[in-house]
Structure formats: C-alpha cells, structure tokens
Length: 111
Length: 259
Image 1: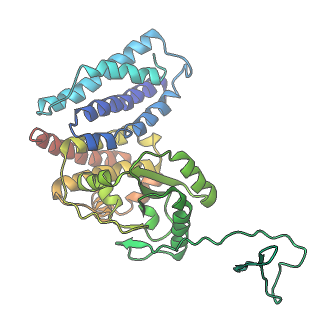
Image 2: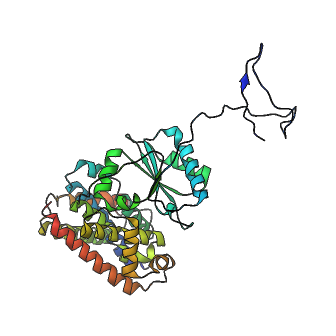
Image 3: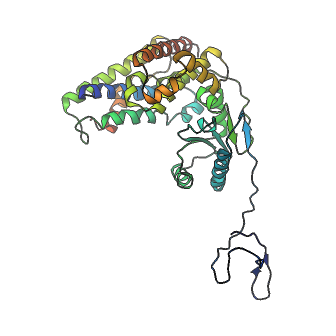
C-alpha cells in the first residue's frame, strides 16, 4: 500500500473512531453508555496499525500532512454526523468534532 | 502415584498411614502433603448445546476450577468453542461480577495453564441482561452456552436504534480494510452487520444459527471458509455487503428520530 493510500485508510478508520465516540455521548442511556465505553478501542487499534506504517513513525508528521489529515477527518466526521442530524437524530454535539479529533490525532502521533 | 488418606492424631505427632501394598512412595522418598480441596465439583448448566466433545467439557471444568478463586457471580462459556469440531480461535468467557476487576492477570493465568487464547468479557448481571435485550451480538453469543450457575435471560427484545447505529459503525469499514484484516476479523464484522439486520427486521431475539444461515443465504455456502483464505471474489462480495449495509443503515436512520 503506498503512503497516500495508507493515509486515506488511516483517515477512514480514525474518523470512524471519532464518530463512534460522539455518537456514544449522544446516547442518553447510562447503562448502555457505560457498557460500551471501551468499544471504540478496537477501531482505534486498526487505525493505529495503519499509522505504524506511515513515515515518520515515531514523531509527528509534516505540517502539510497534518493539515490534510485533520481537514479530511473533520470533513468526514462532520458529514457522517450531519447525515444523522438531518434524519432527526437528536443530541449530537457537533462542537466535539475538533476537540475529539485532536485528542485522537495526538494519540496516533500525527500532531 | 496419588493416595487420599486421613490425617490421624498421634501422641507427639499426627500422621498419615500409607498401605503397605502400593506402587511408589517408597520409604525415604520425599512427598508433598496437601489438603484435598473440599470444594464440591459443580454441575454444569447447558443451554441449547446439542452435542459437545468430552475434551471440551474437561477444558471448561478446568477453566471453572481456575476461576474459582475469583468468586465471580457466574461464568458463561459461549461462542464458536461450543460448535462441533475444533475450528475455534479462542474461547469466549463472560464473567459476571458486580465490580470492576483487572482481567489481564486472569487472562494470563488461564493462558499459562491451558495454552488457549481466551476472550474475557467482564460485565455485571444487570448490564448483561440489558445487553441480551438490546444487543444482537450478546443475543448471538448467548444463544447457546455452558455456565457455572443457572443463568436465566428470559428478556424481551428492546430495539435501541442509536445503540444499533453505534454497533453498525464497527462494520462500516470491512470493505475498505478487507486486505488488512484477518479472516476472523472479517467474519466478525460481517456477523455484526447481519445480526443487526436480522434484529431490526425480525424484531426478535436472534440466534447464532440464524445469523450464519443468513450469511450463507446471501454470500454462499463457502463464505466462512473464503473469508479466511481470501479466495473470495472481492468485487462481488463488496457489492452485496454494501447493499445490505446501506439497507440496514437506512432502516436505523428512519427509526432513530422516533427514539
């Protein structure tokens, strides 16, 4: 898999993790929320496996790559969530997208 | 040689008598004296198990024995380990406990003693019942099991669309990640999708058999093997998969606004 493809697949996976986290917060049921608190860890694992193949592996990426990845993630997650909001899904906090994206990008050593 | 013997009272020292006629335990040899466990061998509880190999029962008993020290409310063995044959990757074990406990040392202890991969799920009883009622994955897991204690899960299905939406997300990237995933991971995401689809359309508690039948109906009888060996026609698979994924997602979205 070439670098661009790896980056795009990483974006797909990490966007999924971020959307998962925001949707989890939107569920207004404490029992269910606490039960599934660890759930997105599996998707994160896949995202990190892709990250491990993107150079530089152990330090943050170049500004150009960071901007591209961050921008794409925010667009992708926003689109996923807006799709739901348009259908009447309540309680989705779109303000969390950037905060949670940055949290996971740091965890993946992208920023 | 092993002997079970009673400790009898002596004047200066207590003793254990060994019969004169025996193999081994010769005078002068060193022996380990240990109290025989008085824990009664528990009866196993079977749910929807038609046939199971004796060796698996021995393994299950050993698991229960090793887990005895932790005093779990119940221990439930489920998943592909209980299917006929030995085509399983790990043993799914649900540990019912009312408080949090670190699973890693338990997992390591079991792995060290049994040499088998284990998938441990720690959950309290209330959440488990809630899971069976709302989560098709739990329903399929618990459609057949062997447990340490009787486990009654006579619950009504409760469809929580937001929760199913969350579960469905876990299957969204199967096609995109196909080459990166192993056979088991592919199957797990496919099973997740089909279980959710069945749950929404049937509005009943669903079983593992139903899920596998539906998978074979849609993708063909060899699909389980093909997913593992990558012999699959990816284009054809992706087309069918996306179709059923989109249908399921649409059904969820249509219902979510009324939740």
